[in-house]
Length: 113
Image 1 (cartoon, rainbow, N blue to C red):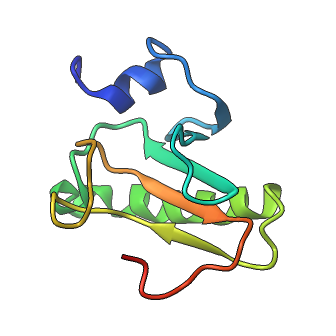
Image 2: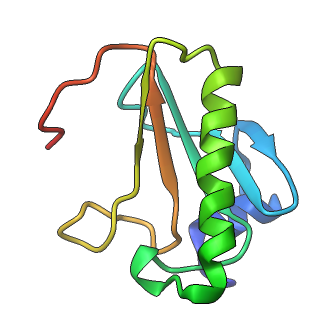
C-alpha cells in the first residue's frame, strides 16, 4: 500500500534500523522503545491488523511467531521476552499494518497497560 508507513519501511523508501529480514518478514528497531530491546516484526504482505488476517494467512502468522522466537534468541533474550500484537484503536494499534512487538532486556510487569 503506497500510503502505509510500514510498507514504506519494508520497501526501503523510509530508512530504518534493520534487525532481520527474509522473504516473508522484516524486523526493525522501534523508534520509541518501551524496553531495552524493542523490535517491530512486520509481514511484507500488507495486512491492516490481526482482524484482517484470514485463513490464507495462517501459515504467515505462524512464521511471524517462529521468527520472533528466533530473533529473541539472536538478541540474547534468554531470560524472557514479550511478544505483543496490538489490534484496533482500543488495543493500542497506531499503524494499520499488522506487526509484532518483541520486547525484552528487562523484567516485564503485568498487567501491561
